[in-house]
Length: 271
Image (tube, rainbow, N blue to C red; front, top):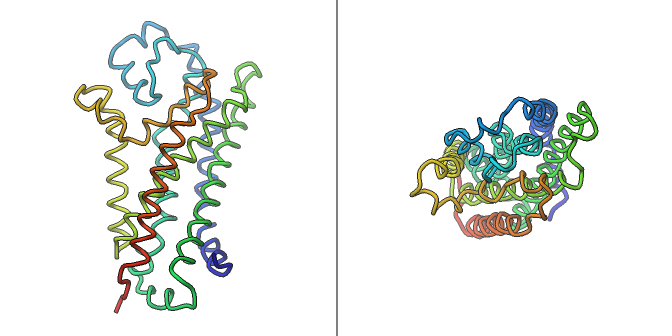
């Protein structure tokens, strides 16, 4: 790694990280405070409606009929589509900087002409991405805990149950970032790379939902990263999701390595 490259990347990424962190913190605080209040208004009979149950099952990754309670609504704060979209957007912004942005802006020749190797560039950018991602999820955790302070103590989820949810969410972030690195390594236009990444993530996102309504898709639900992000189990007192975390981290790592190999070998001349 290179200290100068790390400082450069951090200087360029901290503003977007700060903005998204504050937005995510506010969203988590609001959801953590508001959603548990709905548990008293939702009846067991209402959740037995097939369509309604399928929607909640798609979001939470489990059948909710036997899990109705505050835990179900507390878990929804970590699977809310805007929350997931913000986290994925940050990963895409960070991981399409090199080489897609450099080639797109015509600065790749100068940037990669510095006395540093492509490996140093790749590792330095990766370190800043992971640190900024950890700060983003730390802000989400802080917002969730702050929102819970507005509830009675007995209604707040224990920190020991929230922590594995955040770590699993970070693994989901890494998986999205690995995809972004891979697509970026092949691309010469950042806008095109981001469009491709968001389309892939959207398809995988919809796959997790539509599999609950259309039986033929159930066999492919494992392809969606959201299939491995099920916070309701943890809030219900379940064990740490080691297998889900491993799948997400391994998937992200494989794509990240593949992206690094392509980046190291491809021609990046912008002339």
